[in-house]
Length: 307
Ligand code: A3P
Image 1 (cartoon, rainbow, N blue to C red):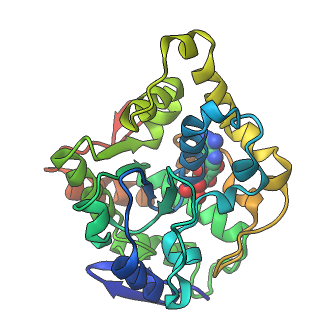
Image 2 (cartoon, helix red, strand yellow; image 1 turned 90 degrees about the horizontal axis):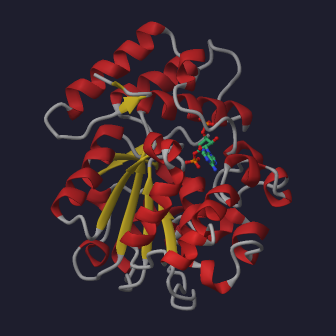
């Protein structure tokens, strides 16, 4: 299941998630201290969650054995539309200690005004080049049994690829998803920090500092000298997160059951070359060129610009 999509404000949502999304939009009230982490699925959400959580809790001595992150990282930040607002229920989020971190896949264009206009909360958006994002989704779907293994069945790899390119894909079209947050960050860079997975991989320490600056909790020179930045980077490395007991076992408690282990695969830039045919890659590169051409948003893999 999960293939049934419904359109809302120009985006495609799993039909079973739409009610929660709308309830969220109507009833969510942002605090000035809230931190919203926004991504398309398979852009490095889990990594961003771990980094942000580690950055803001570093003074509680909880980085090393944070009960929240490390006992159940998938409960750390609840996806608005999936866990919190499902079935149209309005959750009690006032009891979550501040600063609250929320993660969501909801596009900028569909966020409630309370996040965008009437509070000082911050948004961090993480995007990833669509070739790797699609490749990651393909593995995730296969590993969790969301895609039939036989290519001749309805939602085969080709089918998934086709919907990805057409935009009729969970939270798609990806270009409008990227551009919504991109434009918001151009308009208000104090409010929206726009990051790319490839940059984060290349210079994790630099971006850990950037995220801390953005959130108003910059590292002191004492902290930097003590190596706190590097400590957070290695704590949140794929190897480290993957080998935590809580990530080796268990599965998400939401509409779909995904094994925790499947959120940690290779974590590489450019892994698409092993899975996408040249014509698929070509099609995506053209799409990137066409959709992002005028926006000022550039996507690159290992120094090579897409499009
Ligand atoms: P790959 O499938 O390309 O390896 P999300 O968290 O949004 O579902 O994204 C999952 C992708 O992020 C997977 O990509 C996963 O391996 C990668 N990832 C998870 N943890 C990571 C980390 N600590 N550092 C870098 N990449 C990570």
